[in-house]
Length: 157
Image (tube, one colour):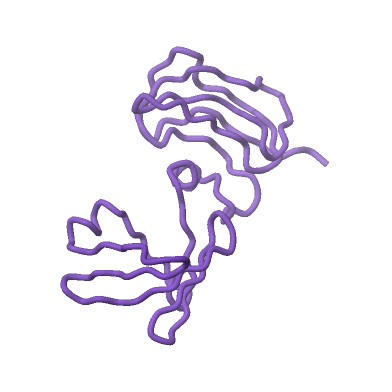
């Protein structure tokens, strides 16, 4: 992020483009960008946020791991205001288990289901309190990317 602008960086694409980051010592790194050498200091603020400085300029970065990216694709990241209306599959996979029932009121962090994709089991949790209004799959179902798995409703006051 530079000045609030979101920049999506995939390490595989960076390597293919001739860009790499090497650790020197402590919080000091060197960024190699197609023959240019750029000194960088990286200070972790927490698991997801970093503060970087290079050539008297300061930057902030948010690091998303596989799980964070999956949640963002599902629309269950922190940027969503209020509960989402549905849970969609971010990729083709197999429903391993479902942990909720229609009519359940779930709180943030409640496990909804487990989706196996690319030989990995992904536990999908609720990111907000909501009501389960429909479950459109069952364990053992093969699902496609973008398929609606669960529908949510608002909790009555």
